[in-house]
Image (tube, rainbow, N blue to C red; front, side, top):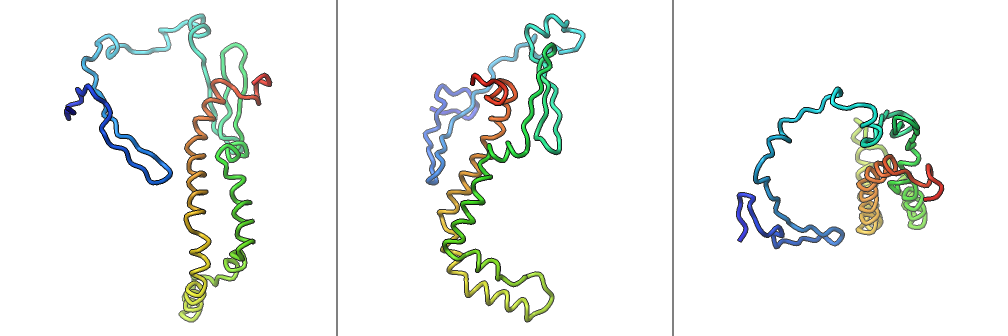
Length: 185
């Protein structure tokens, strides 16, 4: 039996949902039974650490966000190893560098580039120009809907997955390094 107070023995909530791409499982969260008073009352101050303890137990990292790089980081207190992730590298990790070329190739094959390049502007105060815009859109609506169907939504979903995965990859790059910094990997 599942209880709403958080003291459940079973964590699985017997709910599985899917939309064709994702699968969601419902789990219940357990609450902390008792709070450790020593953990709650401890303050971390700079005076509580010495340089020897920092060098053996910690990995100091100084991070600076930039314009040409997502981050520039200096790791360690002795070696001062500099690591950075450029904007170009970030876009490559998300997968968004390959998608525009693929989309353009598909648009050229299906003659969508020509249709999209001839769309009149909808930002006008002239009724005649706006009427021309709406007529053009209605005349080409079937072609646009046929092109932008569930196949392009799949690619957009993969781009979304890449954007969700990339911060974790960058953190892994920062903490453990990649072949960019360690050629043996």
